[in-house]
Length: 126
Image 1 (tube, rainbow, N blue to C red):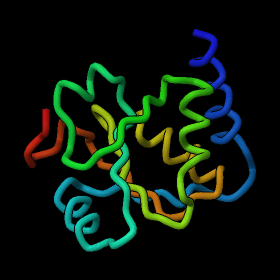
Image 2 (spheres, helix red, strand yellow):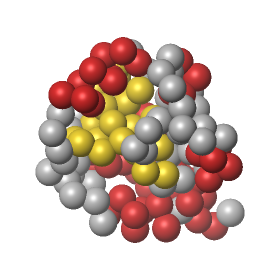
Image 3 (cartoon, rainbow, N blue to C red):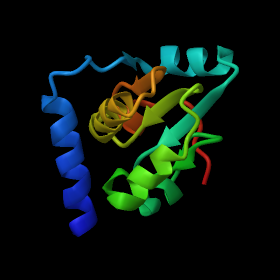
């Protein structure tokens, strides 16, 4: 619970911060998939829980649970900021929060899957 509160506070601080606006692009599933395939240095990031991830995920995705608190922040901090990140969750809300947080941490190429995995029409790995 403590970890979730830490992440929630970080996200709240980022959203209310007067600093730069989020550089996140919200894309429909077909545009998201097409751009991801065309982008050389890209990472697919699934920010759902481990259980959600194990129920089916987009091929090649890394799982980093946004509700993981300090572990999530440490995982994000270890990522290469020069790469493009294609982020998704169940419906698009958590991934939108992750993109906002990542933007505040200095990531610039962020693409949120509009509608999340619920809107995804492609295959899922299990």
